[in-house]
Length: 464
Image (tube, rainbow, N blue to C red; front, side, top):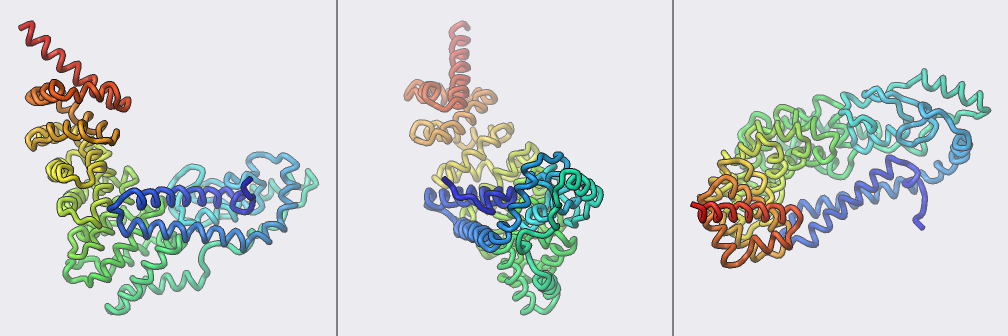
């Protein structure tokens, strides 16, 4: 039986631990299964493991204090209190009710831990918070006090369960002093940028600090804003771009980072840097930011797909995974598909697939783009049809077969000139029939659709 403790009793910490474990599992699987795993993946796995360790240490350091308050909570649990007096996070009677910017009321210790973990949304409504100030809800506190008296319960003092997580006042002052140094001479800028990179990598609370001040991200960008990439020291540019990547890891920061006016243009400029580490981290930042649909549209309108496609074409192993992931995320929305096709994505992707590079990831992107008429035309013009049939015939990956037949199904619907190649493949190898019998449910459906159209074409020919 699993041990119970502070992590299991605190919904916020428990959810955070589950999130970290899932992310660690995903990263380790990527590193173990993929021969071309990136250094960035290893760094993220290490950071995630460190974050889990910190949660465990926090649990141990606060266990004694938590024990002293258990008896009072048991007394409250014995008497069923009104739901409006319970914290949405802890599901327990609130001792220090506070109002979040969303208008929702929480018990201060639990919502403070949520915010200290770097979250910038309301746990209940998922609304992005305009600020992280907590306002005491004196009305609810008075009602809770009256209810406690009527039940003969003494309301515990509103104190934190142990030391509040997060950063101290001195650390906060240090953070703002580092931002100020970014406007100083180059040596001071480099030192401050390096430290901010390290702090935002190791401490989620420092990422949250950037969200508390409207000027923090523009200050971070000061050393590289308005300068040509050749005029910025490479180390300084790398540290600033990597800090942006660190900030964008938390969902609560994604909207804020992307909507800061200079961020996307600077990331696009970084994609063309002479340093592959800078290009790779810029691509990773765009991938992370593109998780939000609103950011997908913003990044696409900014013109970021073209430099991403150019970097994909360049083919550097360190950047390929993040570039492909960013392009995939962006092309989920329809308007970005058209932009990607216009910017030459089809020819670059098809060439890489034919060269055996990132076949799984790039086939998934090509399948998405194949809903665009011009993409279908290019696939036909570039000899994609026989190659996709070959992948279905030779591959052992069901997902790749599914993506290939989905593309071919769209080709079949839109370009009758390619039916000859499909009929010859079917006559010689029975490739499509085999997939219609043994493929995934989606692959079977697409393969059966192609076969039906081929049969109709034959019947029409015989009738004529």
